[in-house]
Length: 279
Ligand code: ATR
Image (cartoon, rainbow, N blue to C red; front, side, top):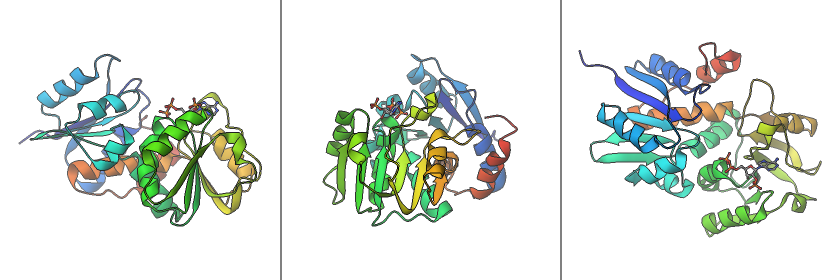
């Protein structure tokens, strides 16, 4: 009997990753025979670790902090969405070489649209932050054809650089600082800053959310994030954290590897209960 196909997530740190649990639940649900492990990679050892994994017969990898940009450079072939993201979170060892994709934005859009019924077409969207996490999701957001997308960041120059990169696609796209948001209203506000990691919140005006607005934090935690709490206090119709995005980006990776789309709802529910098998 042939041994199961081998997959893994590489990062540093990696101990708290939920990807092994998510992918083992997907494998069980779909009847796919595979293994999925978490590999801690030294900061200067990513290329070597990828090469070794492939040489040992590995089929695919997820890539997380801080290696997504390096994975982008390593991939010989990249999907258009990975190309624009400047980062790769999914690698596949194809006979023709290393193939790279970025499933983060698709995961975000799928969680919003399919899981929560939030339509993006024709809506005003505000994205907070202009780092790697935001760059990774802009293309799939713009593909949904919002009426306008505003990128607000503490360092305005970084938001402007993203507008340069993603502009001219027929969607009104602009950059600003947080203080320029006074008097504006949005249907969807997505937090892509890392402020919450330090228990902080970007300084936002109290009346930022339009009637019926959705607030989405790309981060998640055991407890509601600072941004999710802010959204609740400011009457968001929907205040969501990024757990659904995490599971959806994993499902999209699984699909790119196996050609089968897992049912994400029971996996999201299981993680909400508390992933007892550890992250
Ligand atoms: P990531 O990969 O998570 O995107 P990053 O590239 O370092 O990490 O980007 C972090 C983002 O969070 C940036 O937009 C950063 O703003 P600056 O570009 O001005 O640094 C934003 N950020 C981090 N801490 C913040 C805080 N306390 N308030 C507001 N924005 C913050």
